[in-house]
Amino acid sequence: MACTKRSIKPVNTTIDTNKTVLDSIAKIDSLPSFNNPSGVALDAAGNIYVADFGNNLIREITPAGQVSTFAGNGSQGRIDGTGNLAAFDEPAGIAADASGNLFVADAGSDIIRKITSGAAVTTIAGVDSASFANGPALSSAFFHPVGVAVDAADNVYIADAGNDLVRVLTAGGTVSTLAGIINTGASTTISPFNNPTGLAVDGSGNVYVADYLNNNILLVNKAGTVSTYAGPDSIYMPGAANGPVASATFYYPNSVALDAANNLYVADGVNNLIRKITPAGVVSTLAGSGAAGAVDSTGVNASFNGPAGLAVDPAGNVYVADSNNNLIRKITPAGVVTTIAGNGIAGSKNGLAVAYRNKRKIRNVQRSIFNLLYRQRRN
Image (tube, rainbow, N blue to C red):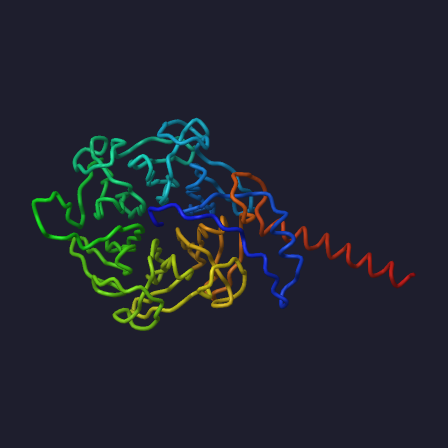
């Protein structure tokens, strides 16, 4: 996700004549709401967790479609506690480990938080000061950390956006710099990163980085060596070109996620696209027309508005925090896009998610239309 808060725009309610009008009616009527959601994560049970940036909350969406507040009280702060006794300050990135613990880049507080499966929130790294320091986790310092990822050994990787670094917090509680150069003014050497915002780590320990302001995707190996994985090589060149990774272009990519086959998905923020990069090095558009909107459809017929955080389930479905639309979207491997939670209006209401309410609403309205037609025939 980008470090700057985006303007809020209403959901696009344009009616697709190839679909039922009832779907738009049901979306507007649905209860749950979000405010600039910026990150999503999945646990082994299929629960979706949302870093609800504008609300300073961590939300949960169950497989049954129930939206609730998992942690946070909605006020801006850095209070540790359980459930609504805790407080966050612009939670941006979120990741889950194999045990169901969540890790949150609490960007406004410049700290990293941990949330257990029982919703107990603790600060595990950072000192609530926008600066730089390595060492023991609770004396380390970050500058607007935005993205997080967790590997199989429970190391937490952090996109330290303000410092232009990728940091790592070991399971033993020590923070170090994996890649990048901190500019102290004593050197003219420039960090290879320019506002890194999203991370994903593969089974070999390679870290993929959405390098936001350089409009490219970088790869950091276990030794900390940085190379360009996709997009221009350290040249500001925004675009939306598909094809081989060396000639592909992006426009403020902000989040990345890997599937089981090591396909990398990119939230291409300004382009309003979700891109896919195969292990063979080919970039394509999985979904999105490029125009800002909230249309549920397939591939390039669908639309997003400032897509941010991504997560992928074992079946290869991609979940998107569609930030400017205040929606949570799902994309199947075939590129079919649906809205699974949110009504498009900024808010923090809980309840049954859109995808499930739509079905019930549509059935009720269809029944009403049938009854109306039946009465007209009788008359």
